[in-house]
Amino acid sequence: MGDQVKLSADGADLEYPVLKGSVGPEVIDIRKLYGQTGKFTFDPGFTSTASCESALTYIDGGEGVLLHRGYPIGQLAESSSFMEVSYLLLNGELPSQDELSNFEYTISRHTMIHEQLRHFYQGFRRDAHPMAIMCGIVGALSAFYHDSTDITDPEQRKIASHRLIAKMPTIAAAAYKYSVGQPMLYPDNNLSYTGNFLRMTFGVPAEEYEVIPAVEKAMDRIFILHADHEQNASTSTVRLAGSSGANPFACIAAGIACLWGPAHGGANEACLNMLREIGTPDRIPHYIERAKDKNDPFRLMGFGHRVYKNYDPRATVMQSTVREVFEALNVQDPLFETAMRLEEIALNDPYFIEKKLFPNVDFYSGVVLSAIGFPTDMFTVLFALARTVGWVAQWNEMISDPGQRIGRPRQLYTGPTQRDYVPLSQR
Ligand code: CMC
Image (cartoon, rainbow, N blue to C red):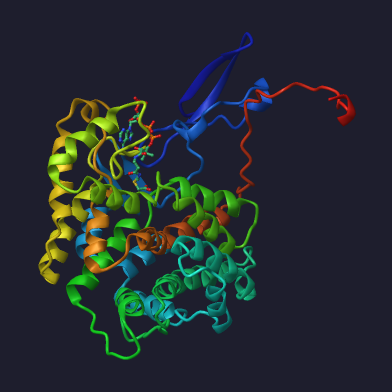
């Protein structure tokens, strides 16, 4: 018998098993708690709750460690490719050369979207936020690909996963093209996953588009940095939506909706807007004071994380990617200087030190994406594009688990107790 945790409730001593993972905090298995005590646990925001078992991604927030299937994010960002990381997340192991080539070929054969789906874009206002378009179009995929919505069939799940990963760049680029009033481009499968996305975004039919290798590499690395991140809000949303048996396209649309929020994926957009508002380093102290003021809703965007209480390892890679892109494109952005100065000031401020608030992945991503040429409202779309692989891998892991049940949290009810209906005339 493994370790047990004792709980005294209403005079009875109860024991609950402690489950061990391969690394990281152990968990107390309280699945029988309600049946035995009639009590629930209370953990709004899930700060002490492991919602599932997973073998995909591990984070040690205290040490600033992020592993995908055991491989450190720094090594993957340095030496791998987004396609290889996608294969790794989906299949558990790094691919052989043949496996990788087959995977890339398969993904490239799903990059087109149904021609009718293109008409959906016309229904949106020209100034629609591209994340609004993403929610709609990705949800609408369920209406087009009926042959991959039977979630009990592993082959259909695989095809749906490949379709989602492959079509996301086409859908995202089309959202951008629609907003700038340019014709949408069809995919070019001679290019890499990332090169193809850059061409569909920045290319025009009238001219040959040349992919700049340094930008392609930087973009691919940014995709790797966003590929998966354990049970974050959007991933948990995808799992919860999927737990009811909903089809994968609808589940990913739910994930996109959750990612949009400024506390999650929307932070990269909010962060660049904040840096623009701050403008020059001399204005930083004013904003630091605002971030510390409890009566001011302003927060330093790109700072702080629920899990990382140390430097986010993705932020380290992102910072060096900024330099590489600036060098390749021969650009200088004074906002990068402002960002670095802001980081330095915040990291030396007792408020941020005590609360363990460090730059997260979004702090530098806006600067680099802006240098590549993306408007701010596309930043979260790029996050969604990359995170799609994590979402589908997590969704697959959940559906493959024979013990999987619908996610159904309970509550601490504080509303009125039962009372009799009062007719309108007597109120
Ligand atoms: N600026 C100022 N104060 C902050 C910040 C910030 N960015 N982040 C947290 N705090 C304070 C917060 O006010 C609280 O103070 P107190 O204990 O006195 O009430 C304390 O730090 C703990 O914060 P919390 O909101 O309880 O922490 P959380 O784990 O619920 O929230 C977070 C995490 C990421 C939502 C939050 O740090 C935040 O809003 N950061 C800015 C948005 C951001 O950059 N989000 C991107 C996250 S990384 C990408 C992703 O995974 O989506």
